[in-house]
Structure formats: C-alpha cells, structure tokens
Image (cartoon, rainbow, N blue to C red):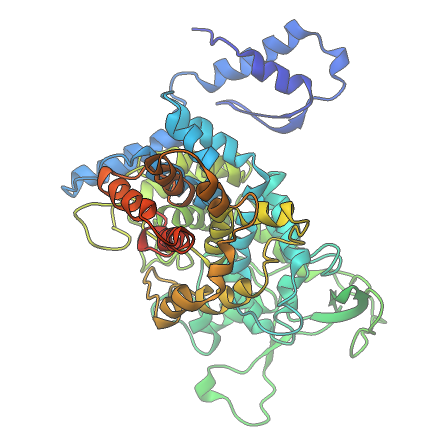
Length: 577
C-alpha cells in the first residue's frame, strides 16, 4: 500500500532541511536537496514516496522492534517478568534528562501530559533530538568518556574548544566514524579545532594514550598487557607495544595564545618503542628491541622507506605549528580504527550507546569486550552493530531507535532490586550528574528568567556564581563507574546549607514570584509547583498536604520557599526515573 505523504515532509525538504531515508537497498543520508528551484513538486513527491515505500517494505524490521524481539526472547527464556510500560510523567522526565540533560519546563511537561495522541512519545523523541541542547548534553557525556571529571594537567581543565566541537558533531549529526577519526588525527589546535586536546592529556605518556585509545574506541582493555602478557585474555605485551608504536612519535607543542594557551600535536618521522620484556625481567641500562606498529589482532603497518637525510628536532619549537611528518603513523591508526571492517570499532560504540541509555552494556562494563566477558544478548549486539555500519555510524539514529524501543520505556520499578537488571526487565534508575542537577534546578526555579528580567543574563551555561563551583566538587562524581551510588554526607550538607537557596529567587519571572502572586486556588498552585519541579501532577494526598501548609496564616514567604526547596532536594528529584 502506498503511504500517504504529509505536507510537512515535503515542506521540510523544500526549504532545504536534511533528508534521512533508510531503505533496504540503499542508504540516503545527510543530503541537503540543493537547487530545489529545478525540482518540481510532483517529482519531489515521487522521490519521497519511493524512499518511504522501500523503507517500509516487508522484512525491513525497524531496529526498535529488533531490540524488543531479542530482549523479549531473553525474558521468556529466563522466566523473567518485565515491568510495565512507564507512565507518561516518568517517561517525559527520563527522556528529557537522557537526551537534553535537563528536566522539561512546566510548559513542556503540561503539553506532553495533555497530549492524547498515541504517537506522542515518538514525536517527542524526534523533537528532542533536533533540539540544540541535545548536542550540549551529549558533549557533557562524551567529554566524561574521553577525559573524566579530573583529567591530567597541561591545560586540559580548560577544554571548551573540544566540548564545543563535540557539541557540533552531535547537533550536525556527523558520522561517528568521521568525528572519532578526527579525534585520533588530532589536526589543528586545542582552541580553534579542539580535537588535539585528547592527546594533550597524555603528554609524554604514550603508553597511557594507548590504554585510553583501545579502551574508549575499541572496547578492549589492554592495561594488563603493559607489564606482562595478559593473564586472562589473548593479548600479549607485544600486542600492547605494537599499538603504542602508533603514538610513540607524538609530541605536544605549545603554539602560542589564543585567549588560552594553545596546543597542537606534532609527529616526528623517527623513533620507535623499545621493548624490554616483562617488568619482572627488566634490568638497569637495558635498551630493548624496537617494536614496529602492529594493528591490534592484525598485521604490521607497512611503512614507506624514509629519505636517508630525514632528521627530527629534539623538540618542536614553541610558537608555531609543527610540520607534518613524511608518513603519519597516527593517521594510519585513525584510518584502521574507524574502518567499517574493524572487528571492534562499531561493536564497541553500539555497546557503549546501549549502556548509556539502558544503564549497562550488553557487554558490561562497556569498555571490556573480551572473550571472557560474554554478551547478555549476543544476537542483539550483532544486529545493532550491523545496522550501525549500514547507517554509516549515525549515532542519532541509533539513539532514536533505542529510546523508542519498549525495553527503554519500561517503568523503573520492578521486582528485581539490582540497580541495572541483567535482562533489562525494567528501566535504569540513576542519579543525575552535577550538570543535570544544576541545569534542572535553574530551569525549575525560573532563575534564568529572573536574571534576564533584571538585566543580568548568565554569560554561560553555569555562570550562576558559587553554586556551580560547589556542585562540581560535591556532585561531580556521583558513582563509582560500575552503577553503584553513594551520595555521602557532603551532598546532604550542601542540599541543606549550600548556595542552592539563592536559586529560589523572589525576582520577577521566577517560580516563587509566579506562585506567590497567583490568584489561583492553592490546589492549582501546588499542581504547578509539582509540574515545574517534578514534571508530574501531585497525588491527592500531596495536594492536600501542601495546600494546607501554604494557605495557613503567617509567613507565606518562608513556607513557599521551603516547599520549593523540599521538592528540589527530595530523592525523587535526585534520580532520573
């Protein structure tokens, strides 16, 4: 049956919007329809119709359905009863936090909850993926993958260039294959291009860089093979140093100031890793044997013979960009890692994205895709990997399929007490990051509206004074990396005595001012309070309790501030649902 095309689809194409059609036979991705004046409307309709017909042909199972099928099979096989689908209020809060890193506004929450459409969840996901805040939040997430909260020195604490570049990769929907390669090629400088900052953190530490590259881009942990052959996996020391040889010639170069100290990555023509054997056999003065670059689990790098007169300076001079080498090992590594034929690359990122949105990887931890660490759903991981390659490493598409799947949309409450159940029978339950907490507090209280009304609009995302300084300190590392969470007394003290109270401003446009000056009954004002802070309607007991408290005689100012603060600091707000 020929699908009926909506006028909106055609209109979006006519104004030059990006057109993504995925079909059985061919991939049309990231094409802007140029010179549209030369394309008549009937022809355009025909093109869209063909794409849609092919994409909905029999046998073309959507990945979201493949996800549900494989997970459902595992539930039945293991006699697991999944949680029911989550409520709309839980879903809207969860998906906003996962995609944008912030709760919905009062207006956004009301619009979604009042929408009676059966496809409103799918439509909301599409809207959020097109929101500029999507790239900002994904930049926060992936910055933590590459740097962590407290990376090594050399100026890596000031890496706005890298984060802004990463934000653009997500918002412009650049192929992961492309931008991962850009990080590994490290061209340009740390302020304007941003990407060299990844290697800057490993200045004079090519072995540390090797561990990070294999773990973050390939999902392979090689650190044990740094000192001896891996005791539990197939990797040898020579495998480790064969990979280290690709980055052993890199040097961090200070190329001057562009508001900040600016770095670039230079690569020498000469120099090899010297292998001295297991750590237990090393001796003083032992020089070792040179190790040639060797792709992990693959072949030696074939290198052209260099001219006999090639020389390198001991150090590249500061103040100017270093010259390119005659032959770049680094670029060859980037090419091999991001190849569609690489046995690790696509699988590693598919597993990592799944873990980001589902709480744990199909192989968990996500950076340990070892033979001794089997996948919980191997066929699903292979299906996701294959589909991701077919879609040219389109992470936005993969994310869209995951969050539209039934397993993602299950309730977070169930019979299993594990933080991240092994069969994904309920949704993950996680603490908000420091960034998510602060931005959600700012949005819920209307703090930005207060500043704007007073002519003091923030200069940047976290230009709210002292709260952000202490937020990073006390909430910057809310878990141990394997799903465990321990808030600690420092969080408790901050929530009770910290600068969070200054966000509950009495200024114009803020939540306090809106509620205190409203002429609506207190029951309606309590409802707005709950929708603004917790993204849900209060239950009758909550409405009665808060309304009675707020309409009592006496000091309304403090009672209302305390009511807002109580919801901002409750356990329900601290977690994602």
